[in-house]
Picture 1 (cartoon, helix red, strand yellow):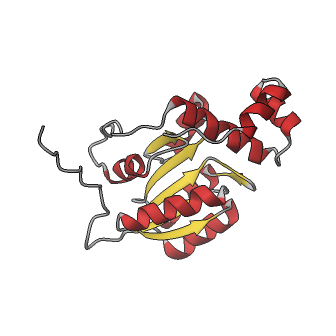
Picture 2 (cartoon, rainbow, N blue to C red):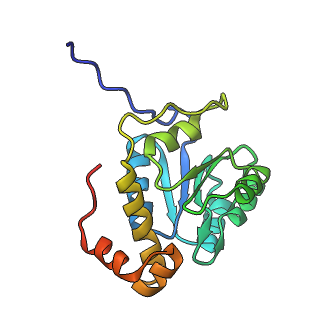
Length: 190
């Protein structure tokens, strides 16, 4: 069996404006995604709130944006309006851990190109930002396992509940002891 070349990662177009605004109140995710997008050739600006994101959108007029739907001080859709006012041709992607049809429709009506569930792969995000043919990106080569997706979701809800096990269990509709056992285990491998 011959060695197959590794697929080339998508990168930002050279010679054009590659400024990218990433707004997410989850600092580890925001920073990890920021580094991944820099490796793909984008000039990244990071923000953790609606207020900070709107400020950067107005001041720097980024060509691309990746926004979280739910932020600690409001809704990522508020940033979409500021981006559209500052730069009508900005390519905007919305990320959310709370996807539903109503918010997806609202995001698309506001001018968002794509609406991706968290956790999203940097290659899928890059493809969505750069794809001008409105086609779905190809499936990832190594998608996250279902166990890993479940683990990530539980961890995110746990952090959003200020690490309160009882509140997290209530929101996830699971028994508190079951949640405690899950939290005591190490994260599954991809």
